[in-house]
Image (tube, rainbow, N blue to C red; front, top):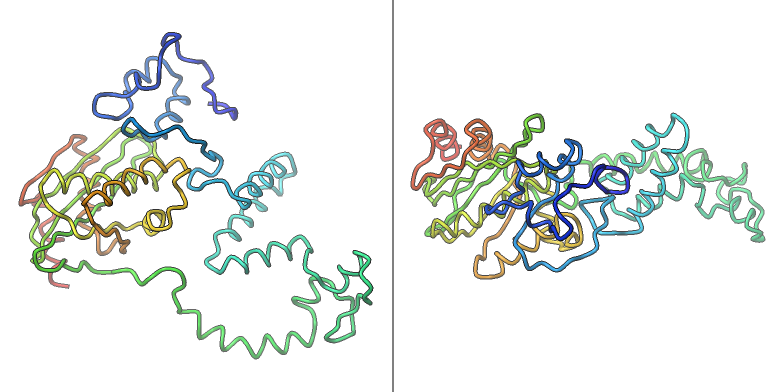
Length: 347
């Protein structure tokens, strides 16, 4: 698939052919049909596209940043990438730096400040003087040097003394968790009369399969239902995790179990469900489905946990990649999970 997002050699499926002929009755893409009509690289790209039920209206997607809708940040990222790709060998290290900056777990205003400092857009007196503002251009703090961005943020001797006084305070705050609530490291049973499901996914990129593991337990840690499921797809890890959430809720409905809580070891996708800002992304269709399922009587809370609190589901997802068929158990689970399930109840 080229940078124009068109297949190299269009498939000859007929002038009136529609996308739905490539979708099997189970709702997944028909891999055999794709193999017959598309080149391997085109097929790989097609298998990254999640499918869903009909009825969703067409919408514009910002495909350059598949996990988010268009923003000034993503537009700026694309422009920088285009400039870097046409530049020198320093492009790779520059890309790594910008990726590091935008992923920093600090308030957005700090990231923007660093970004402006990198381009020398800080309103120091030297920069103001260059813009014809009536100032001397000298540092107003020490009056010993030109007030450049580097001097104002780092080299000024008076500011060095201030930074030295702040270091003990900053060091004492290094253990504070920002933005993310403390996640569970151990499995905690649900309340009496309620059911909790744990789900996980593992992707085998080499073979092109995704495995899903789902386990539903009661307050005593007893398994009420479990499932191992696998599909052929080339989804991103985040899309695969969203599918795991969707399949878990549907599995609970199919088993007649009213779930109160769903746990998955992926913080980002849980945030997507909470903030609602990614509905115009390539994951938007799955997000809409999950939200609809939750809002139509399935009042299940979705939270993120550490993998150590999700090991039985994780192991089951790995087994799904070995058996490559859909299997489910009612009021039991595979015997190889017994020790992990017992450990969850004795932590």
